[in-house]
Image 1 (cartoon, chains in turn red, brown, cyan, green):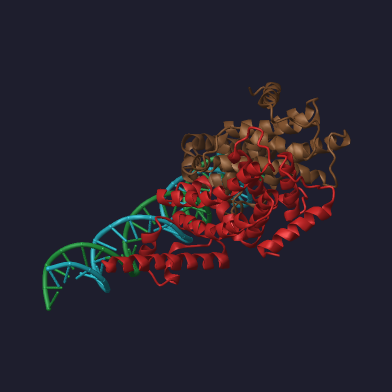
Image 2: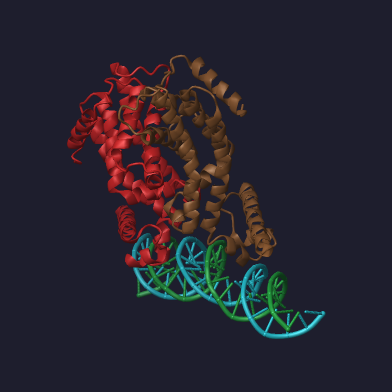
Length: 237
Length: 237
DNA sequence: ATCGTTTTTTGAATCTGATTCAAAATATGC
DNA sequence: GCATATTTTGAATCAGATTCAAAAAACGAT
């Protein structure tokens, strides 16, 4: 009957309310300060009600991550549709990623935290699955681009699997973000901050994959213009 | 007077005792289960004494990390001394890194956790400095290899700084480990586990830097033999 | 060896904050 | 309108890190 449908919807709405409020609180004072009781109160619910949605604080943080990755996905889907050479599109993924992470610095820190064993193990199995599921479409898009590049003859896999090449770009992105967000690290080793370092290394990797057309890094202008072009297309200038 | 020297030494010994015991407990039941009171008791000291060495639990975990990185460093120093082409040595760093992380899986998880804002912020400033200091010699070795490669004409930086190139390899290593150690991730995306994926991508990156001599990835044997050779040299076969 | 002083150690008490659960409130079906 | 089932509540519980006043040990002068 219709009653239970309404209930289900209301429940979903409340869940979003909790997540919105959590996001707000985190933006205000960082996710370390987030307290379950305070969050519940901020939404005019009792603590126990919050626990009907999230089995633990970790579970809540993971839910937050899962929701964020919808935004992430949206950006990637735009790139998937883009009619452009494959090499431009794979690099656009990195630019989008970089931009996203810069704007949502809190989110990077959170994801770093959530992926930690300490947190991962304390979330519900369902939530873990949900978060892994969120990665699927992103993975599909990236490996789709790799596959298209191979099909179009832009990229000779030389025996490597599609996933392996996708994994390479992913790992480089991931590692760069980790290093960038590790407190005091760049400063301690006097590495200039900013996205260009990562962009150049990413293009070195793509060049090393022999992903055509190769990019000439000896001319700084070339990369600069490419980045500008991509940012323009993505509307994130 | 000599008295205070002895005290200092005893204090240092006790600190090592605590760290040894912590390592043991962590090996037994994971670092999530580590409890300050239990650790103190296991060493026949009161909780408060433990806090004379470490300002917080996070501080202790970081101290553990710092100690581990001495082992790390030792491995790298061996490579620094190695008389071999620069390209072989930079790659040897990755192999050593990979091997170390595989053997000390607990340590990778711990370092992932420790680098998290939540933990970082709760350690003492002194400890944070100590940990960053530990990275210095490693950084020096890696960028030293890059520099030597440039000097020897194996590598044309094309305007990039030494650190930028070192950063690229570092990020790729780091990112690969993060992905490898993220629960269920490789399985969810059916990426084969094992070091070869990373090794191949690392060589793609090095090829992309035009680091001579380039490695031919179309012949799997070539890389396999190189890895074997390096492992043999490092005595980690 | 003794005694007053300083330093170190002790562990029970405190504190924070997540989690639970019995009671109260609300909704549902008849 | 009533009996039953479901949901919400928030005070009580629990876990475990951290503190700190008191006890013990070390020190140094006599």
